[in-house]
Length: 142
Image 1: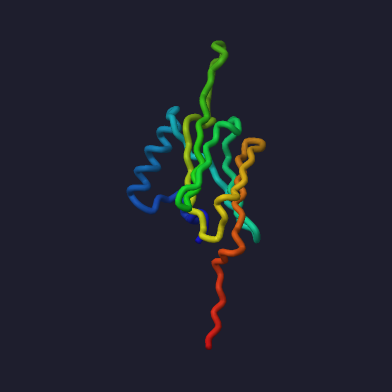
Image 2: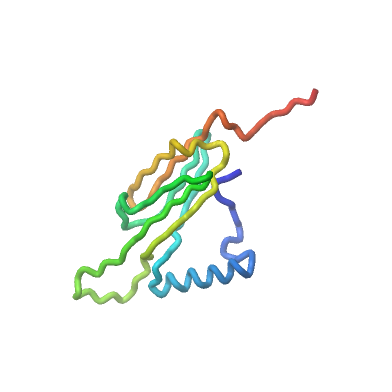
């Protein structure tokens, strides 16, 4: 089992429902909506999984990270502040609002030892594998 499903045709919706969802989510974001979906990279090595969430412009206190029933959820909010009244924005492409990303954790991880750090706009989560819960088994024929 992996942390997320890989879909090589991510730009092509697989169902009509996902097409409608994508249409409304993307149009809300483009028109200054209140939600967005940050980009995520997932890396696996021998001892752990690493999840990297691209969310620039936040403070480490702005994140909420929860593990519940083998689901890892990362959420937070990036607020738009227009502190100076003399600014005339011509274009705003940066995403603002709340976000939430959830991942199903594999059975071979230790959810109690997840480590999180925020550096240069990237939230980095390290999810260690539990050596006692190996997913691979070799069965010998008797």
